[in-house]
Length: 182
Image 1 (cartoon, rainbow, N blue to C red):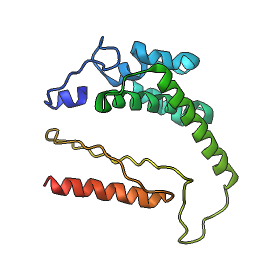
Image 2: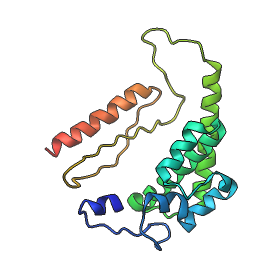
Image 3: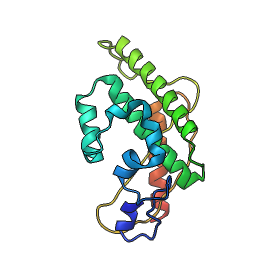
Image 4: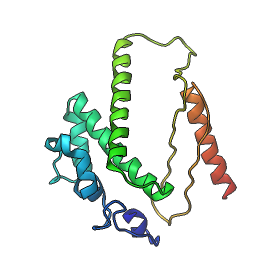
């Protein structure tokens, strides 16, 4: 929210989780008392003396795969939980966020294991990558360097089994929405 505030948008800049400090990336990911509970099994990974962007870049570029997965899953879980609270009025519950992080880790580890099994194999020309039954989430985002906040939209699409089709549909919907708003 502080990024919107710095662009002149009237928003509450207090951390939505603890309501004690302004919401900065550093506070949200490292310092917030609500978030600290999610790092308890990985406190040795944190280096709050570094800016968040520098720390995560260091982890991603130099850390072993399991460390990278753990840190990224934690960050993703924190960000999703924060967004669910702000945009969907879903209360912050550390146990729910931790469960989602653990499910995400298991899922990512399975994908990495499967990917390791197909290294060296190539897809036949024109064949698409498909996913199992369920829903694939595709997030489309946009930003502007100058100007002011214009609008935001959240929605869902149902597109089973084809990641490329799901991404194309999400982008089409985003562009249609932007066009409708001139």
